[in-house]
Length: 324
Image (cartoon, helix red, strand yellow):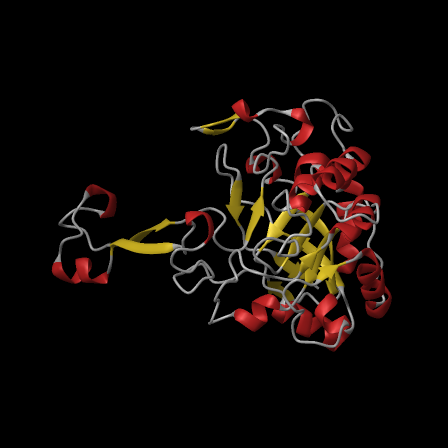
């Protein structure tokens, strides 16, 4: 990066320098998940030592971070029952699926209504366009009203597993949570590796804790779209040169807000997702995992977090697991 104030030209420069278009073929839709080779996934099993299992997902319910009138019209998941215990008691659950009038078996059923990126989730490669293109040079006509014909989240359903590494930047700095507007640098990431006794390698999935979920849980305020700590443009060389498979953060948008560029929103989304084909996870909950890592000193683990196989979707809710 130059010493001048970052701008859209900075984003273009970084995108050009670290672009992966064509690296795995012109029709590739997996992007950096190509780094998670079968050999590296098999080797990641060595990170399982005790068998502890820790979820990194927020509860998917009305208590989530999407407050009324929130960013982009997203809302918290809505859970509804269309057959419940009251129906059974009143005798209204009468259909062939549950056996009809003369059978003993009855059942309950429910539905969920949600924006696919309203809680713990992955961004698909078709989620972001920059200068008229998404990953691997595809144009906006590839995402129609029926969904993504290229770069959908379904391309990752059998790929999201491997070695995970937690870099707890908040703990590194001696705070419960980083201040909004703090831009995480490559130096911060390297310092966290040294402090935690862990090294991020090729094909790893990197979890970066700012502490924001722990600080805001129960009183989300402007968590969704407001000022936040996050990765800064200074982190790009570290992320790109480590050849990681995926990256997840405990903030709404992964990168620092307000953004470092005044003339382009979410510049790291442009570099990471569009240019690099990097899979980005957001709204992850690292609080339990971070506490456990501090207790046992183990900051690597087996990571498994496949998105739901929604056809042509550009994002997916997920229940990511750390298995130690």
